[in-house]
Length: 401
View 1 (cartoon, helix red, strand yellow):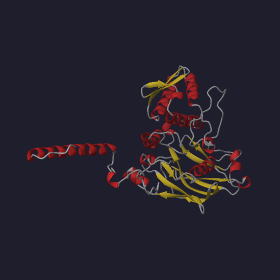
View 2 (view 1 turned 90 degrees about the horizontal axis):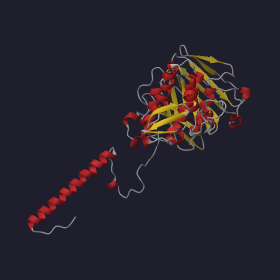
View 3 (view 1 turned 180 degrees about the vertical axis):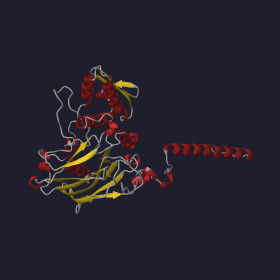
């Protein structure tokens, strides 16, 4: 874990205890730090990372449980979550699959002072602050539908690919509403600039009437021609912006939005360069948001903002899925060290086709490898030239190189 986090994080996960939820028999994590901007989970395929995210999302979102996921849980499922606030309050959220023993609590937010309130009404949802996204984030709602189809803010995570809100349609509607109002037009411009800033090779987004184009590496392209990585970011962040605007309408600057966002397989469709940069970029754009994410990649850990927390998910036949916290300072480690650390637990990272350890190149970067190779070529050439010179001076024939 890094040393310092965001000192002004309004909401953050403090602890959780999960019992009999899918592959989780029982696991508990307590005393998470107040201002961890990111909580990153890693673990092997099938260890239960997605199940953990879904359990946390259901407990924190706290619906009245009138949806199909009720049939997918054990009747003895119980999830207890505690959320801490910047004002020192502890908010308890609980989910039990047995409706007769439902112990749900919900939280709401006062946008004037970012204070948090607790409601004991099971029909009250904290959906304005909790958001969930699954590993598949490319599907969006159609632009031609009469109106936006309302979905839960954790629907994409629970259903692993439910359609997200259409940000292009939203931007067009906002632009129509803003005609003649320079203040609203400037706000819309900021939203488009925010989206572009989170897409690695998009310099600017342009809206001209019903046409939206993305300047991708200097070339304007429509959304359907964007790369999968850009589409994934556009769909998820666009959906998040719409839900923030709906749920926290008094907020004008995205930096003032508050919430907890859960993301499964953060690295999906992203180039390694952007896998490393994306966590820090998201925290810069949304400093009032805590992100809880799973990943199979070492690179998001290398880009984790200061104060982030790292969890390892483990599963075996006897105990099911369980979670352990790892206090590792990733700022001091290179990828090889991270991959062989308890975060990823690789015992061997060598290519199995390597014929001899003598051929292994252990420099810290490919640029250094290239420099070493060039130096070796120069030394070999110099040695051959010296041998040839000595051969001529001694009158002895010299073998060709």
